[in-house]
Image (cartoon, rainbow, N blue to C red; front, side):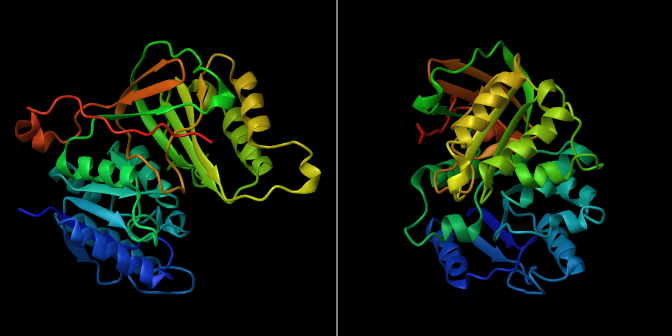
Length: 328
């Protein structure tokens, strides 16, 4: 039986229609049954329909009984509708076996859902920018997605960038809730009911188009709010597509991470996670409990089996993790 993927648009309007069509075609070519939401290509101002239209689309995704509910793209729009999302319907859909997958603006949905219900979603690809990439989808991303659909993904691993040396000591990181996503979107939730109150978790962060000084300012906000210091580890993914300016005079991402590492003291700060607005991205279970270990520059993150409804079918599969040795 073909696995069923439901594509919907909860944030910005799909502007790159060719990429969307390529993404849909690629998913069909991979053998999935693809269902496209009736409002997936709707446009209202910069959004994929007005607020009510997008809330309804999320409701239809929850009612679809699909194996995967996949966003068309990120952009902006979910923070506008967090007070009207169908949290119960989405949580019930997840309990029935629908996995909600996305990134970027989807961070707002994921963390609001986690704060409200504790439900687990997946930080992962979008249809257009990932499956619809002109050069074709990244092999590692596609393999990780396939693992999720098949109920086989149990963890990931990566190699720290050489510039950051060996991994900081990870002392017995067990049963720590993995959470986070896009730094800018997550920071915008601070102080609201949609920001998860997670202590002793593993917080992962990425962003795109943000200058290192803006990244530092947001990280400082999370630091001064006490969020970073309460975690078992802070993991930085990819921060891409920003432009340095002459008056930076050497100030850059490494300046930011070195300073943050000093500020955090007892909380390990790890970099190089293959996740963000980049082709090579792993899938990460937001809200799931993870274990972490490091050996030299190699970091491992395991979450075990997430598909309770598939346990019997896949009990014969051993630990099956995907990852990338990914640095700059």
